[in-house]
Length: 130
Length: 130
DNA sequence: TTGACGTTACTACTAGGGTAGTATTACCTC
DNA sequence: GAGGTAATACTACCCTAGTAGTAACGTCAA
Image (cartoon, rainbow over all chains, first blue to last red; front, top):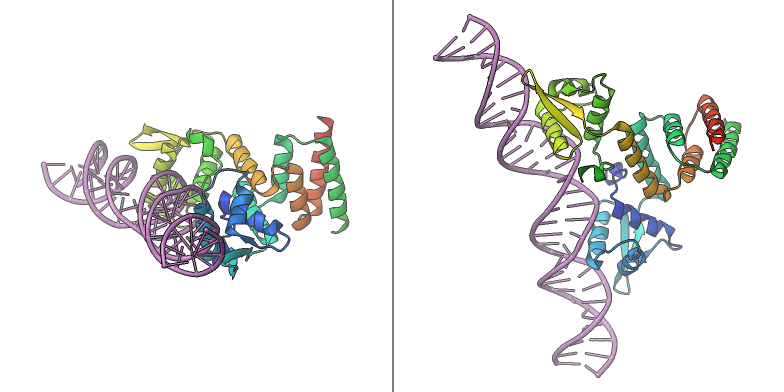
């Protein structure tokens, strides 16, 4: 199935997906996607159009015709994609151990006191649910 | 530079890198790599050899001749690669926020009580160092 | 009715990961 | 020295992301 390799999403494809997920009505025409992405870098209009068509072939998005424009909407849920990419990442680098991953990042990266407090709270709540 | 896109490492390449990093002397012949990887899947000997040559071209590994065999060793450090892949991951999915990333994974995934306790300890220690 | 414009379709190319067969080389043994 | 063996070198695929030019088409306005 097309969805089985959702964890292999290129940077541009992911940007597009995030953009569509963000939309209130989850729909956007090619021109809108192109417009919205123009702050992030330079892409030709046709690049976006081609990318969207390829993404549709992969089952990532769908389109419908409206006013002679293609309105694209996500065909996969954000949670699913985030989940699969994360799983792939944790598997690759930390043999699937979420604990190892967090432990590693926590010891090798900058993080503010506020963030740490937030995480403490989160962990405390998480413990209650076990 | 070759190292600039180290965060884009294929699965096989990463497996090979991890294998080399693990080695006590950080060196392995093609046959050894092939052997070590044979539990994980099926790869032809020549696939591994080709991959290693490509990786050398990318600056990921180096080799020296010994006993008519190529002994490969990493040319990039594990910490650097782990760091760059992680950064790329966090940037892509969580706009660069480590806190958001951990918060998200913590609330959407399975984790044991022991792991949570471990993380609490880690966070406490981390706070002391700020 | 013609031409400009906006849109999608088609086509083509580059790069890199993955995959592996075939050719070559060099040594080692009988 | 002939043949086998183990190693690398070379070559050639496929696939997908990214990139974008050009063609075709349909509508609307002058």
